[in-house]
Length: 352
Image (cartoon, rainbow, N blue to C red):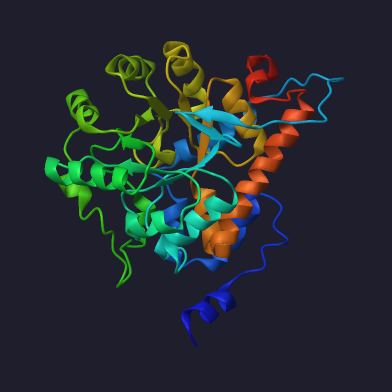
């Protein structure tokens, strides 16, 4: 039996899935236990993992009625790109442990859903191959290595392959206490490797603002900092001249008991004061979550774990469906709060 037929037989009927929580429930039985634990787990006692969701759930919405919502426009612009919606695929590692086609399926799914795909440094597929199948913009998430020649070469490879931005992870000088991964002795299966990043955490330097200055000195595409929670760091980021920031707690995978990203977002938005774009990830599962993030100062959001579960359940089609569900729910949330464009979404939609 050839690989194409094997993949076809391996597919799950995802037509009955109605929300992103359904994907995770289905993925539990679909994924190898080690792969599921890698995706689903966080650091230590996983308080931050839970808080990401609880904080979003706790925010109440304040709808405005009797508004003409017959036409809803979710389009926005970000770093010179015109986007049909503000939902991006967050960088997540090791897609081949979730589906045999790995990042190629993710890129195809992103293309069908008209979404930017931020490729992880820990991709299990070479960037060159991903670029060949991508029909929507690619960004690259980057861990900066001690070997500056290696890092510079990877940045230039990303530029050569057409990546439109770099997302520098700044919250991981060391990996957190990932107990669930430890319990399952997580390791990549035989035959799966990361072509652009080997044994990175053993070699990753303690990143400083000087390194960001160095990266900006030669990068020809926008540089964003991923992993900002402290408003003072956001202020420094603006002063450093980066093109944007991503409010992120690494999905609760590094330092446990840091706040939910949606809690940190308003303080950061106040410091940034619209001088550069702000993106947010962490716990996004509903269209109302997207609305809340934008209302509290984000220009766009990124989704990670649900993409992995969608990939595991349905390959490219699963990725597309995750994004389409979220986009549809976002449109509904806009209509039901009386907002017809992204520009109209502000703090007035939050019940105070």
